[in-house]
Length: 94
Image 1 (cartoon, rainbow, N blue to C red):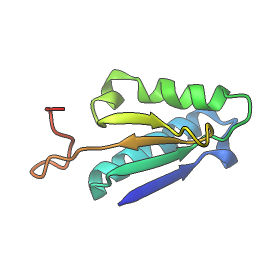
Image 2 (cartoon, rainbow, N blue to C red; image 1 turned 120 degrees about the vertical axis):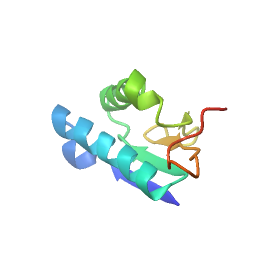
Image 3 (cartoon, rainbow, N blue to C red; image 1 turned 90 degrees about the vertical axis):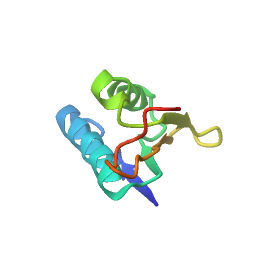
Image 4 (tube, rainbow, N blue to C red; image 1 turned 90 degrees about the horizontal axis):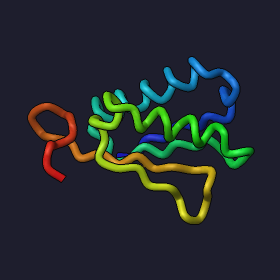
C-alpha cells in the first residue's frame, strides 16, 4: 500500500504542513503502508527543505525506515516503512 500527500494547497501554512505530515506518517503506521509519497512541489525548494527537516526530527525519524528523493522528479519524496507485525511500527533492525 502506498499513501500520498500533496502539499501544494498548504505550501505557506507552516503548522498545517506539520500536522499534515504527522497525520500521513501516523496513517502509514496504522495502515501498515510500505511507502508514503510526499509532493512538496518544485518551486524554490523551501517547502522540500521544510519537509526534510520535519522528517529528520528524532521522534519522527524513528517511525520510518528511509527517505528517498525521486531522481526523476525533484518535487517528490518517498518515505519507506518497515513494519513490525506485532506492533505496527517499524522494526529495530535495518
